[in-house]
Length: 397
Image (cartoon, rainbow, N blue to C red):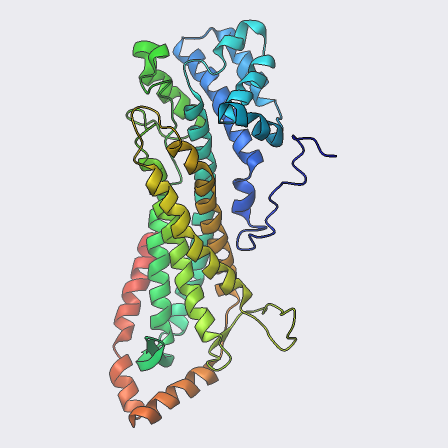
């Protein structure tokens, strides 16, 4: 029989999360990554105390000892139930691992929320950098596709019905502009604030040296120092959520269009490697677009929990802060999964020019028009495509 600390039976290995399973961001946001970030934060705090002169130089050895530790995430998770967060059992282990004379400097002047918030910002910054990398890869693929297909005519559809002519390049330009929006938002999240407010946000244990300790702490972690405690001012979390939702929706738009274009009766696009069906051997499902669309639909819900938690009472919230942890990881993973899978999807997207032409001919027959009419509606779209491509150069200058 497994012990309570055995995470084998209860571990979430991504079985019901195929949109994120196996992605780079999944590993960057796992429990082991969070534990490593908490340990890194505690070591950085000791070093900051030494640098500012509040702790003796000999305490630097405690930071080195903390850095060398490997802790079991499942054990911390089970023990976190008693106090309501994993930092409490973490600190017990860190103090036990250093010399007695240095133990009092471990976690000195800080509180559980500081350590976990800082750790989650470290994890989030790593995830955001990976999301930016994948969105950049996606954007470059789209820019190339947009330019190559700028003059390929196709049917534009509104309210699911054939509407007027456009070009494939114009549709792709819309995709690309959405990715540009996402890249700009995600870039604001690749460096995030640490937290060091202490028990009630005043960092009283450091006295007048508080700002210096905060600056040193942020420097060791290569993050930013906030102007004041953000225990109940959850702007960093809301900005993260907004950026990740935007990234997911930018990818989700592409997936939604690919899903329609991949319908058998439309046939304008298909994935490089279609997904199999368990019951129908003739199918090649647009599986990657399906996973991206699923991620895009989940993101707003996870983001809404973070938004609802932002209105926190007094100096430290009860429950609102705790409610953020899983949804924050969810938005990072979903955005990361969407960005990585969409970049792969677009890189291998197969376009059927015969189907594009066939569907356009059907529109021409329905309205009784000819190629001149198509030109009337599409000859100018290169102007808009050039604007998007010019923006692409600006975004990635």
